[in-house]
Length: 172
Image 1: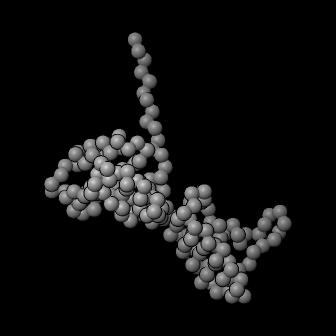
Image 2 (image 1 turned 30 degrees about the horizontal axis):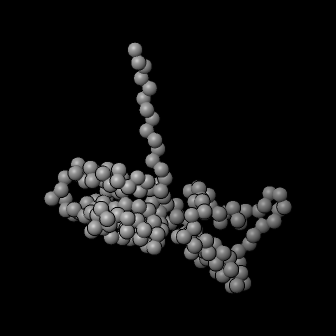
Image 3 (image 1 turned 45 degrees about the vertical axis):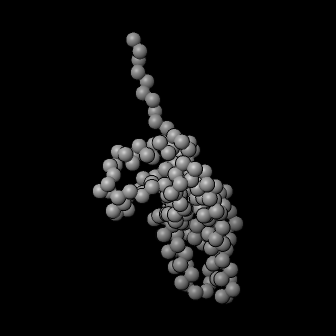
């Protein structure tokens, strides 16, 4: 019985180990609960899955589902370009810095983040430190003080920004 519970737990957790390196896995919808889907009787065959063993395994899976619904994030890495104290720099100049960086390195997003008492400008979205190294080498030519930092990457940051709609005005 314990072998079955352990096997089920490993089957559920095994995609999480490789998720940090696989880009092909599509994120699940936030409202999908695979545990309920798994335990529900099949409409066509009438078959069902029963979990036997320690009930804490089911509780652990429910907790994992709840945590994943909350954050939609994963630990990752970015390249830090600049850290500036709030007393010494204006927000407008930092926003211009970010815009200038995105012009110099098209396709690489830069993020302005406030971490009391400093503003930090970081670029890129990487799952591993090794993936961030080529960008660091490229960026260091222009920004020699840059370095790789660990950061929480949110899935919304990975989506392309929606293009702004151009207003159609009638020309007379």
